[in-house]
Length: 448
Image 1 (cartoon, rainbow, N blue to C red):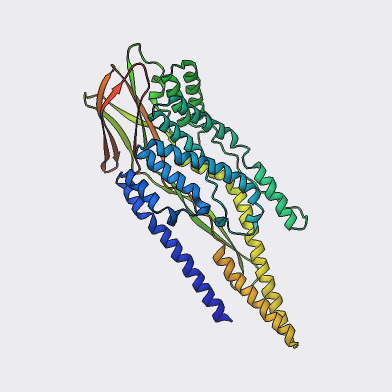
Image 2 (cartoon, rainbow, N blue to C red):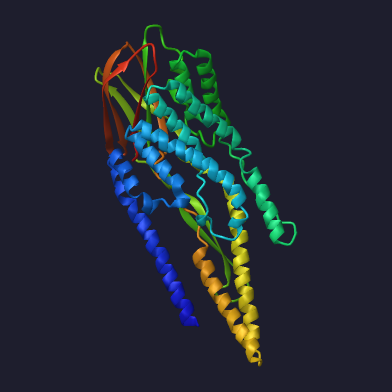
């Protein structure tokens, strides 16, 4: 019997390890292309590895990774298509997740549809706004930033329905006994400085002076109302954006740097009983940050003028803040599921031990079967209780902005990303037209 259990455990573990390694290895060519700035190659690698990396329950990750990489590669129409598909899939998956709550009390979360993280859903619209702008559709860009603001307003109530459903199912399974309500932290991220900055520029570009001024006020309020997220100065250039002298033109540059967090597993084991190896295993995801090498970004015009890009949004901090909104629910659900499985296995094992000592051969046989069930249950619980570590990989970690007022004309310039050891990457922009009558926004990215 012990040999059977051991063999099953080894085979199961080997299978888990095999598929985990295959998935990790599949990201290597994509990450390598991203690191070198070959975003078109990275997007093509996502497509070629689609079946390996993104299963039916993780289609959203394919849309997000592919959509972001196509955006960096300046394939704006394809980026729009993928990010819009991702946004719709997130809405559908969230609606479905409310009804899947009961099922997730008893099965691993990785078997459920990935519904996306809140920060992923929010920043879809920021990058689609930029996609539309680059394609010359500034009205479409404004629609996207409005969608972004609507989602932020909804964050404070988003998990109420799921919390109520989870509470009802937990009490049903406990025979009607009261179960402590799962707690969740209401996100303090209700106003994105990045979203307001983009909206301010888009309105300024369409002549909406009053709307642009309102967005600037909202931008300033974001810093004042969420110091935990905006713990750095408001970019000095923001005050200059709506004070452009008549006949002059404004060149704006928005830069992105670093990479968004991925996830790692945090395992907690709580002993039950006095037997060796009797415990409740709780596996929860936690964010694993990928520190950026970037310390400074400078824009150098060929004519000699220079200005720095300043941080406007720590997207990594936003991911941390929004993730906290649902971790309470996730902890409650995971703990309840793990407890039920562990206690059931222990109960079967304990009853089986008592029955196996019976002089009645039939009772003893049943007892041995229960002991086997309990032992298999322990192995299965150890292997099956795993955190859901799915997350997109290619959103940036920070957003930076800056601008300079110039005579209308055509300009060439270089954007230099610096780290502690000097120049990280230099991006050249050639013959950029800077018009007094429109928004002149250039975007650059360095995911280091």
